[in-house]
Length: 404
Image (cartoon, rainbow, N blue to C red; front, side):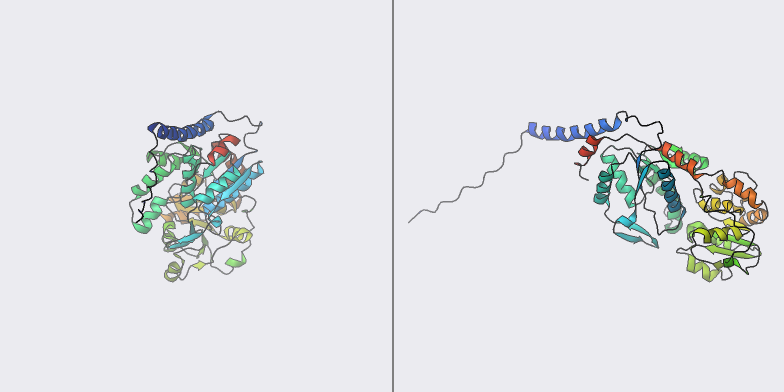
């Protein structure tokens, strides 16, 4: 009887020697240290104009078809930065699969964006990266930069802690704790006004720089004294609000005021149907753009801005550029824009502000005040705030090997 032989067991691979483990670890760390050293060396010299010839990447979760001040700001910024001789590229939600933000379907959130963001950045190889928002795209771009020791800047456009509190009652300080975590690694956090800079410094934010906003003075301009057809027949005075129709904008405080004449709302949002039901005498015109919006601004008697949480309120500048005075609460944003000039009224009582703003200034005076807010100056200030380590081909080749 033949004897069955048991096949030998496969050899067990020997554990790597401690020296080999250390060698692998040092190899990984050494590669990371080389990247850090490259990022921190002195950038190469450029031509005499440091604001031109740059590749600038702007990452934003807010983009068209959203209609808000952040989108208009970033679109207009890009146009003026390009006009100064730079190449600007955006990473926006329309480049990804998205889902709607609960209770706010106009806002789309990008799904699993990290791989695509990494590819876009490596293809573009930017001189500077600016992360404009704190959403999924902003978080992914932040992670990319931190993993590669690539400097980046951020900006503070929206008071998310207050907005979140208004919708869910989450404590405001919890929101600001998350915002501090997000912005802390940035080389610079850009804000629109000195008062916002002071407030955020008091809340523990650091590396804050001013980036003043501008208004498109070619698009927004006085259209004369004739009535706009969209407002024809409305009893005067006409009190106008333009913007998102959402709870954080505090529009109800405006619509509830006992004002003579006609209240007009331009915009859409999650609160629209509820306000239409509660205030049937208000004229809701929907979303307007371009010259159509300019004519509405110009034909109104007072622009009313009831928000207490906006960081600036770009619509205030648009109204002034069209020759219309502003009424607002005495809060940051409108207070910074009006700055004591006789082109509007900021009061603790919004009704008092509205009545004080009516007839306070001529069209020419409002327009002259708006001329102080130039987009070219804003774009140059933005460029001056960027952290530009300089282009290094070897750095980008090595960076491409890091997987997230």
